[in-house]
Amino acid sequence: MKLSFEPHTLYFIHPFRIAHGVRSSTPVVITRIGCEGITGYGEASMPPYLGESHESVMAFLKKTAAYLETLSTPGDISTILETIDAMAPGNTAAKASIDIALHDLYGKLEGKPCWKMFGAEKEQTPFTTFTLGIDEPVMLKQKIAEAEAFRVLKVKLNGIDDRQMIDTIRSVTDKPIAVDVNQGWKTKEQALEMIGWLQEKNVLFVEQAMPKDDIDAANWLYERSPLPLYADESVQRLSDIAKLKDCYHGINIKLMKCTGLHEANEMIKLARTLKLKVLIGCMSETSCAVSAAAQLTPFADHADLDGPLLIKNDLFKGIGFIKGKITLNELPGIGVVPNGLAKGAV
Ligand code: MG
Image 1: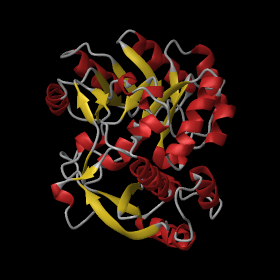
Image 2 (image 1 turned 90 degrees about the horizontal axis):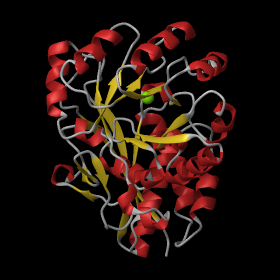
Image 3 (image 1 turned 180 degrees about the horizontal axis):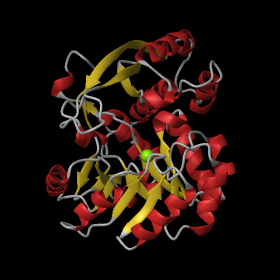
Image 4 (image 1 turned 90 degrees about the vertical axis):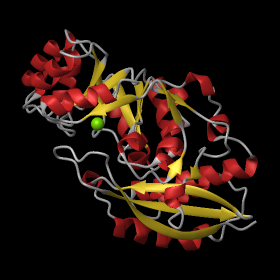
């Protein structure tokens, strides 16, 4: 049966609260690949630092349409994805949207959830962190109260208000914290001093402490840090991992960086071989891309998949969270159904 590549939809997702430094809305592109009346859904989210836009995603999808429509199913998904990857460099979110839609479609055609197709155990999912952005103490305390159901908090630091942020959190809760610096510390000495201070504050790990291309500083810090260090911006694809093994204790894998589930699964396997820990994260995304990423979380040490919890117009119903633990469902594919909000859009 031939595949059909249906029109792509641009949609804007809106955060519940527009915090300091957060965009008021995020464009996402919803992709559909059909076969025998069954539709597989995919999603591209385009954070500015990866260099993709709505226009570039649409242009790339247009380029792939002719190829996808020559295919019959069931075909070899890895060969299809390799062919698409070779069509142009970059475009990782656009590629991820095709990868997600194909996995969703294949799962539906086989009547199996993707986690089962990957050989995962549904019960082995980790707890997701709940993200607290940089904010004033009063607002921060309010957000912590709202995050009551979540066991692990994720805190974004910027190298300026860091101690105040952590002290404010610690004045109201002793929950474990994952810290994301987003390349915000300027020198390795400043980073080491802060990590030493954070070690006393029940912090689990520190993500992207140094600028992404400063391998020497990352290695220096790795040799000395009392807390585990995770790479986010420093690692995008499978080929980035090996060179980072003496710079980080773990990696943050995101579908939008690595072109989707197929490569993410390969990255997890390589990370395990190199004794690196695995965190699975997301961008500003709906339950479509996040439920896709969640299919692999039984293989991960940590997850940061709170994307759908931070937006008020989610387009899909997908994975759930029970006291913060990711709960996969038995639906075939990536486990999503379009919700009422999405009628007419997806
Ligand atoms: Mg990060």
